[in-house]
Image (cartoon, rainbow, N blue to C red; front, side, top):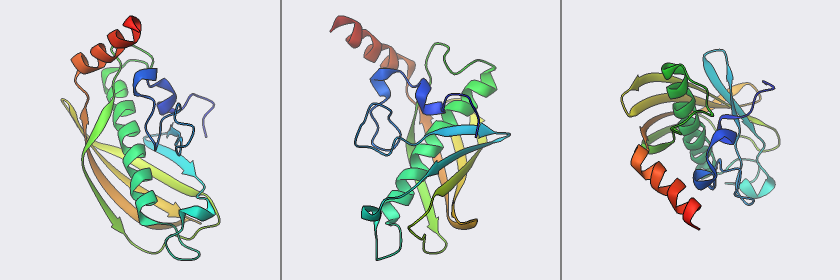
Length: 165
């Protein structure tokens, strides 16, 4: 993994509260994604309470991880496509317009999960991300997320609200 900051660590405070990836949500997953070549990679170790049936991970957690890793990848891919650093303004954030998850095999509890994602389309305010979730080197789920950029005026209004409070 890289020594660089995670994609999610660049999110402005106003949009860093997501349950899946928000660094300011102390009860959330706080997923961290990094570039590894052309792929974005994240790791997450489920806890025993993330159980579906004994010994296996709850499918909602898998979808949540794919979702947040995909939106982070979308933001990072946009910065790359625009040739600018992730701490430059205006800030870029994405939300999920659609998420498709295919569960290929049961995902075992008891070890780290690896997420890998690629932005396969970066076009205007839309980024399509394909991802996989693996346990012990076995791909257990794959996903496709269509991510849409949060409008700049909304981001600016959040920043303005913070300055006024």
